[in-house]
Image (cartoon, rainbow, N blue to C red; front, side, top):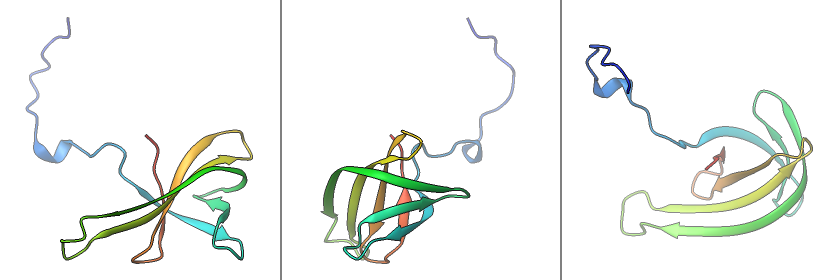
Length: 94
């Protein structure tokens, strides 16, 4: 059993899980990701899947994203998406 530390839990101590992180992506001429930069440069060796999500169209800021499941040159599989409303790229692991 875990002992009670006596510390109070405050709302500001919580953080969301799987929050997308901004990254820089070098794209090819078809706008597909070639290189992921998040402090270090990672070549993308394969695109496993690609899908688009258009959601919450009734809201002032609807979602329109193009997701890619990719393999990095390190062998790591991860997901990135391009926000089609802003043109920004994000990294998000699940």
